[in-house]
Image (cartoon, rainbow, N blue to C red; front, side, top):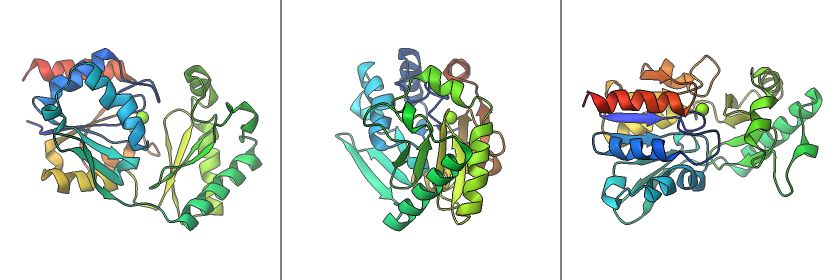
Length: 254
Ligand SMILES: [Mg+2]
């Protein structure tokens, strides 16, 4: 039997960048009784709270149960765990200011050259490029764009594949991954979900075979693919409804 259930967030646990539903929150709370639960995503710590933890608290999760929830933030380059009272950061591997500046310039140049720099479509105060400390993220329509607009922008990933190809020419020293609906994450090569999952193995004292991973971007080039390549058992989902269906199956046979 698996000891750990690990999850991508965007489109695996939620509709991209929105809080999880009551249904997913209830299922995750139930899972905490049997498994260590590890969301791992490119997003920042505060978004893990807004999208997952606060919703589980709304649905009555106890502080004791939260000790079994492990937050692998920014693709697992930061790890937070709950000590029964509050969240504590266990480790953090940030990019340098120079690396952040180089990646930001590269992404903007590539997107402008290709005609995909949509500054005019941003909400006031929103930004296309965001420093997430351990990685830099390009979100074509910013953070605040509506879900429908985001889904419509690049449903087949073709725009982002072109941007990534150009970024690789301009700054090949960094790694680039497509994720979410409009996003590209850039990081030091190897600072992808493999980094996070490798640290997860160490921190939780488990083997690869103890983990079951859920993700929606498990195809080559997707941000969940490195987990597949590691040889971790993976369930590919289209959306959070698929994940809920699978979790019901797992919880039903315990
Ligand atoms: Mg995803």
